Length: 260
Ligand SMILES: [Fe+2]
Image 1: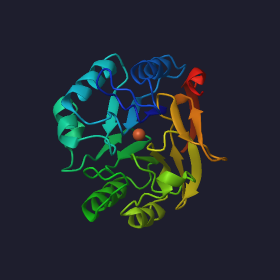
Image 2: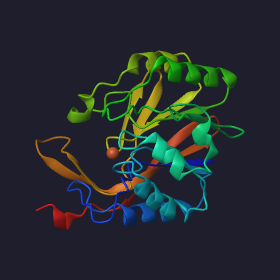
Image 3: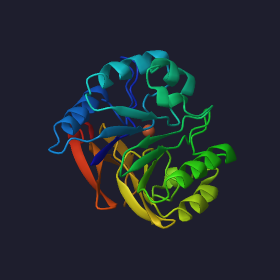
């Protein structure tokens, strides 16, 4: 079975243009269409935060309209650009958003696999945040099915990514989360967004991955000073025989014409 991951859609009000991400709606629709057309249909889509640019009710209405086109269920995780109250109000029928509070945390249960979503957002803070309450909830969930392969989903990577400006942001609770992850070998992946580009690294006995944003993004160049375009896309996490493989799928090329 496959769990698809989309991230950093940054849906925003009409007319608002960001220089590092000029178009967002069409690339998101393209990603959803590619996921729906995949030869093995994903069981669900997990959206790991920065669902919207500013967290306004209008932006969540727009996001809702786009996601309505998906026949595959979409599970929403907040990022630092989101606002929990507006997210919950905009998606009242997504009852899992109320499983925990005030943070948005929940578990998606399948017979052979679990996805546990953590909320690493906190107000207007840019970096990650996990307090004792959120981590205790995670430990309780992990104790429920210790033999079941599990994917942890959250917006902020708790591991270093090598991307300077993001690694410079403080993630409060990172070490405490690492201790929990190390104690639970059923965790096969920690899947994140925030950096808008795909990266992989080992962390605390598991594998941490970040997904590309659905839209092409201008990012800090990985090797040289300056900026570079990363094409948009999504990840497919495929469970088979007790483990998970991850595929990067590109749906939208970088807008080359805008590089100059
Ligand atoms: Fe983002």
